[in-house]
Image 1 (spheres, rainbow, N blue to C red):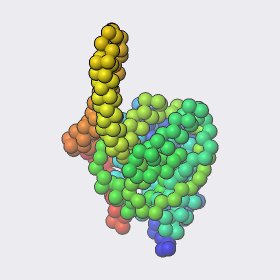
Image 2 (image 1 turned 180 degrees about the vertical axis):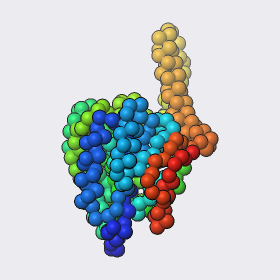
Image 3 (image 1 turned 180 degrees about the horizontal axis):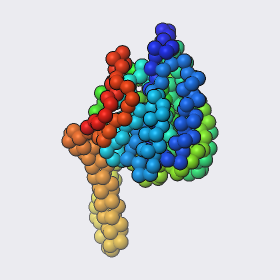
Image 4 (image 1 turned 60 degrees about the vertical axis):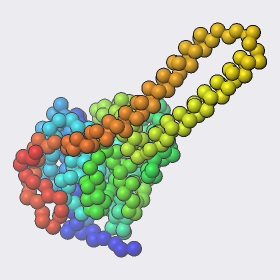
Length: 334
């Protein structure tokens, strides 16, 4: 197994998406600064402001002004967590790139052990959660069911109990940036890419400050993106259900004909039964149309070719380093 260089010639990019995290940013900067000082590589921290409406952008710009490790990408509006991370990935210059949430639930201290795994030839080191402090039983249960259901349905095996907390080699990032879809479920896309991937186990901490930016509505939307982006099984389920209901219908018709011929004196009003059958069939048809609509809608959005995010401004203190691909231009970006 070939090992990679791990010295001051190596650049690590740490991407941190931020949405209304003013309360936790001082703690985040304190922890990240200590981790940076302990690493044997050069580091750039790419803060992505995802349309924050509090003072997050101001806090990030203050940090950038006093510390040359930090860069800030200001998106034109709130595009969502996955697109904010994608914006950071598109401009990260590192030989190796890490994704870290701002809430400190995923420990930045693991960047060192992750780098060591990368040094020894692992292309993707992803954090896999053990205990999940500060999360309700409902959220833990739904997360457990979601990953098992997704792996049963998906075309790529997605490691259970993982988030976007991970470290990736440059070639993985370049491959990920080349994937054009709009509905991005990054942990699934990275799993689909292949390469050598290994987990690093940890216990997830409770949020340090502020409130979660992934309420139930967003979790449902992310789950739908994951299912419809990585599985054709819902369409096959529709077809099989249609065949099954057709066979049941044919069987019922045969039964009714036999009953009518053999017992013509039996009168069965059937009004309530008819209405129930109609309601069930119409409900099933609309469900199938809804599933089909999800696939068609995603195809329509991707065919439009609109960018997944727009950058209002890039704040950087150094010109791009020609030794590292990707580039990080200073000033305005469109």
